[in-house]
Image 1 (cartoon, rainbow, N blue to C red):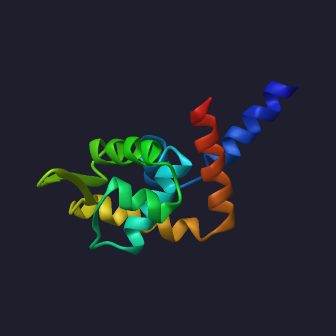
Image 2: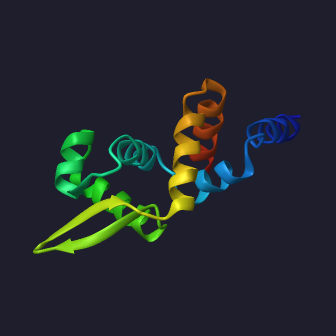
Length: 125
């Protein structure tokens, strides 16, 4: 009986735009990354260090560094050397920016957020 309930839950939670679901599963697959993409969406011209971003986000520097680097590898952010500092900014890729915009807009909807949270937690297991 429990397997049937889990399958139904999985089907209900998968009822989301396939592009956004893929973006969530492959790029924004943690709550910290969700916070970071929201930050860069709201501040699209920001170029800053992991230290400053961690302070702004109220998160530990080690976690922010790791998540920023992963977002850069995923093509959501750019990672550049500026003197002796590494700085991060939103990638100029139009498709990524459009997906990011759709994701943030969809995040304003409570049902979408519930589904997104479900997928992030499932991905952590």
